[in-house]
Image (cartoon, rainbow, N blue to C red):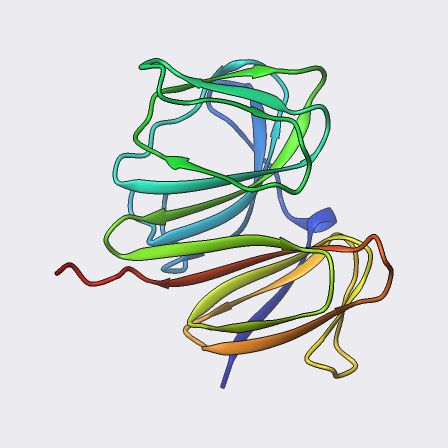
Length: 196
């Protein structure tokens, strides 16, 4: 039985950051009920309302995608990362170990975050703008960023702002947008490559 869970961005509870710089809406984490120190993977939406440092997650790989707003500039203290996250729907990957400061490019913005525990899981994050076949993955998340999407050629529809996630249930998807400007975030979460 496939463990498939639907969610809506509008009804996800928002948790304030400890530093007061924003809020986070958790979509899913694995194992279920895991905290920030022991998750295998975690997917969330964050609203960044003030400049400040990003939390450091040692041993975690991250991907961040601007959803709306004017975006932020991410710059690490060692100078290795200096990235303007100001183009919507373009994922940017970086190590969670990096000490990163965030500067607003304007007002508040929101972003889509994917974190995977290095050595356990890896994530493939992409944003689709047309019909596609998505290869199976044991865990994953789909989120309709713009427009509505039909899934698997059935009557199953993912409306804008809605999505679904699956756990321990390998599943391939066929996705078809219902409008030309539609966008769909797709996260495939796979076991980490075994070390040689």
